Length: 330
Ligand code: UT7
Image (tube, rainbow, N blue to C red; front, top):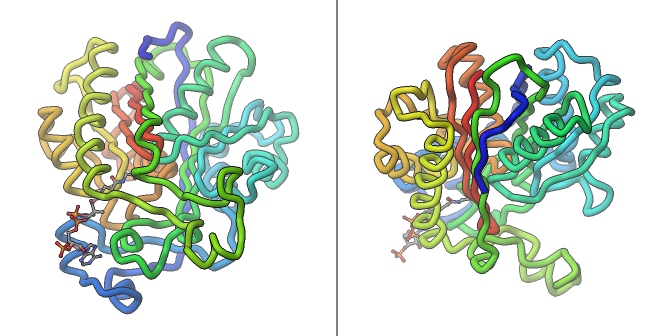
């Protein structure tokens, strides 16, 4: 599915939030049999942010969302749609977007969550774009928010160094020109077992056994996910750029999902991009799933890596498998 948008819809405000507590690789060394050297060389991750236990994803989402609304000059009571992309919702029901609505005071907003794992923020952007372009709402707040520390198996060295907590948010509104130029989304459910949280849903409801077997935590076939991530993220990035009729020279910055530095470098090579055109913050935050590309875009703007008028490409891959790319003129 790929199509250029008709009525231009753009990002008019961005915000992010990470908890203050830092967990370094040396801290992880004290939990499992690993080393800073292994984690750094295999993933590029040096540290990650972790919430105080009991902090729900909506708390992070609200902090990021408020900043995005402020940047857009939009009052909470004027927000018409809230989409939260997350794999760590506050509760299975109701949606985290509903908790965010109440905490923000955005009582007019339609609210729902998107479950597309690390691609969730991009699925959210494309969904919100269609709501606005179709005239259903005049603005939307799209938030990627994760408390991955609560679904991490802190006894499993093959996954626990990888993940962190955080949130990133974007306000979408009609714009005169630019905005979302093209997008490309995809999924392959036949590979769902490669990266999943096996229990806690209707297939394996929570029980003493599922808890004892740690089936409420993330399980991953790292090698297989790695191979698919490289191939599909590069392909997704190229597809959306092609649809927007843009080449690498037109792009100011590519902001890939920050799962692993080696994946990002391999994607960069496949896309034929120079290092300076690829945004990185994986060393500081690790893999923050649905929050990753949102936080990346926000930081890129904060650090003035990109300015108004620049074209950025967001690209992500995650559990499902799901993937997506969005080309935006800021
Ligand atoms: O966000 C969604 C997308 N997720 C991703 O994109 C993640 C994709 N996968 C990856 O990033 C990588 O596969 C990992 C970082 C998870 C693992 O890297 P790898 O190079 O694929 O390592 P591996 O799983 O092949 O393991 C290599 C060795 C194994 O030991 P043996 O069997 O060779 O003796 C593991 O037991 O490294 C061992 N190992 C570790 N050693 C020290 C695995 N985890 C660790 C660890 N510390 N933390």
